[in-house]
Length: 307
Image (cartoon, rainbow, N blue to C red):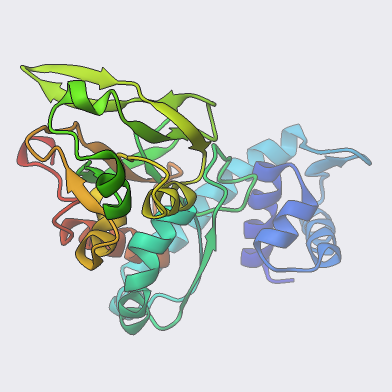
C-alpha cells in the first residue's frame, strides 16, 4: 500500500463524505478507493470511517487521523513546491468551473498560450455557472463575474469588467439610436435574467455620483450570456454586456456601442478557490496565468484604487 496515496484518498473521502465522488474526482475506480481505505484501516489498526448504504462519516479516531494527514500532505506539498523543477514544470489536472460566456470570450482564445507554458497540465472546464461546493464537486477553482457569494472560499479579484451599451446596426437603423437615458427607456432591450437568482438586471449608469437604473420593455429575456449576446446581434434589442465579451463583435461591426457619454459601474471578475495552506503548483500556475490574462486585457484591468 502506498501510504501517501492512501492518506490523500482518505482525506478526500472525509471531505466529500462519498467514495463515488472521490473516485470520479481522482479518476480512480470506486473499488480501488474502497480497498485503499480498508487497507489503511488495517494498517493503523482502527476503523476510520463509518459506512452505510446512504452515507460515509468519519469516526472519532478517523477525525484525529484526518487532521494529522492534512498537515502531513500540506508539508509534502510545501516541500515539492520548493523544488525549482516542480515550480517550473507543474503537471496534472486542473478542474475549473465558469460560465460558457467567460470560457468562450476569455479562456479559450488564450489556452494555447497556457499549454505552451504548461504542457503537462490538463484543463477541464465545467460550465455550471452556479454556486458549487469545490470539495463535493471535485473542482479546483471557480471563475465568476460579480460579487462572489461563496464566502467560505478565497476570492482573488483579477479584474473589473468595463460595461458597455450596444445594439446591432439593424436594430439601430430600424428604431434609431438613443442619445440620452430618457430616450433609452423608450427602446426595447434583451433582458438578462440571473440563472442563480431569477432576477432581471436593469441597465445601470453613473450620473452625478449616483447609480441610475433604467428598466426597459422587452419581448425576450434570457439567462445565458452567449444567447444574450447572440440575440442582440440578431436585432432583438439593446444589451449591456461586459465589453471584453463583445469586443470582437464590435470590431467586426456586428454590434455598435451607444451612449458612450454615460459611464456604467464595472463588474468584478474573481477567481475563487478553497482555503489551503499550500496550493498545488498546477493550481497556482493557473491562477497566476488567468490573473495575468485579465491584467493584459484593456477591458478588464483593475483600477489602481481597487488593485
